[in-house]
Each structure stands twice: as structure tokens, then as C-alpha cells.
Image: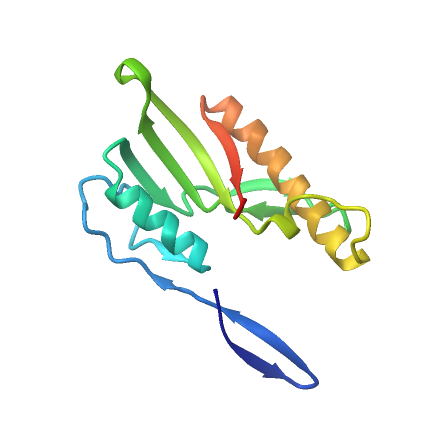
Length: 147
């Protein structure tokens, strides 16, 4: 899932797989421009949305949602990874904002480093704002991890 590391002085920083996804079923993709993926997991999700017959419409990085950053208190923007409209039971449709995140950035655990806890605190603030935005707009919100 990680490509070669990028040497930034004394630290090796991982370089995640990133790129533009080539849509095969363009009638389903309703986003602006071509969908971007910022990890291999997001690329897999693009493929899922593009080829799953129950996905009616989808878009990558569809909205900007304001939220208050928990560490410095300033308002900033959160961009969820995807919006997906899918077919459910009895041919109903449901729309959700989707965030793709590794579990270690999503679930607080007892023996985490402070930097990991800070990342999770920031993510929780983003996700609370996304849940509120989604509810106001008649959508669901879901975080998907590798688990």
C-alpha cells in the first residue's frame, strides 16, 4: 500500500499511492473533473463504485465542510473522500458521504502516541461536522477502514 519513502532530511516520509482514477462507467460518475485517489484504499473504492451495479451515482471529494480545528480553534475546511448514491432494498436509494481512513487514524486506543491521539481528535472534529452536514442534507455519513 505504500510506495517508496520520500527522504525529507533525517526522516523517511512514506509516499502513498495517489493518482487520477480512469472511470469506465462515466454515466455513474457525477463529480467535477476526474476522480482523485490519495491512497490505494481510495483507488479500490473508486473501482468498487465504478463497477458495482447497486451504485447509482458517485463523486470524489464532492463538498467542502467547515469545522473548528480542535488544536488551534480556527475554522477550516474538511473535504470528505466520496459521496455515493446506492440502490437498497425494494429499489430504494440512499446517499452517503464516505471517508476512507486507516483504523489507526480512526479509533482511539490506550497506548497511542500523543501525535496519533491528535490526528484522531482532528478526524473526530471533521467527522462530527460531516455528520451534521450530512443530516441537514438528507445523507448518511460513514468512515470505512481496512477492518
